[in-house]
Length: 339
Image (tube, rainbow, N blue to C red):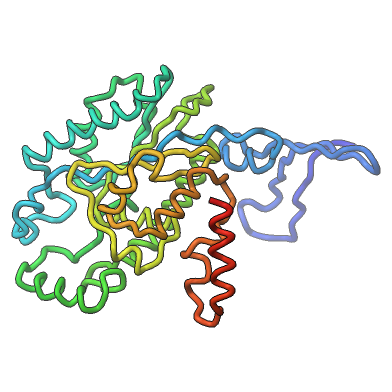
């Protein structure tokens, strides 16, 4: 039996009273099926995928490439921040050159794959130095290679306050070293922990984009898409911390990327992203990764999405002090057998 469902209200002065709800449907009883229209799900591809689990997911991007902006005016002269708002600080001439070289380096990395259908998709901080970095590194790519770009405010720099008094900033940064780099919050600004919270939201957006292939051009399902994130030093370190579930102590041992440099998260053999697919252990140690973090990166090379490294120091027995030596030896023996 098919038909319209009507809204029959009580007496009311509302201008929408008596308006019918046109829910087009065909309803059948007993063992017969019930069929509803998609109610606009076509406008929300993530909901379509959720409602149709038999449809295969789009291929994951081959890489997520992290880029720190080129040298800015603030990197050369911190007094710039006393007269120019942080979001408006520009690149220097050297920074423009670093951005252009960065684009060439990214292209060299991608072209080593030896495939023809590769593309890049950009996420960029709205700060001027990041936008200028994007525009200059993008000179290395033809229009046909750029799948798209999204300005993403959650990738902005840590907020240190508004116009900054440099003498006061020296005192505050010294206090941060005593208090702890992750939890210290600048007056009228943010802590790295605050950045972590907004990066967590961005990470969920990014994972959703990956799962539904939002950056894939219409009708294409290429496994050779490369995502490029143009952002800031601390923000990128916090992103890595959130993605790989690093601890606060491990975060505080990391170093900034140099201006205009990249860090590459590349899809491993099981589908997860590992820094060791592109970088050497020595390069990652220089960045600040410890031996336990490198062991986890080796695991990431072969693991599948959704798997958890139960023996990793980040999630494993290093938090506890009541295990005896026999327990530790058994764990070490198991680690040896599985690596």
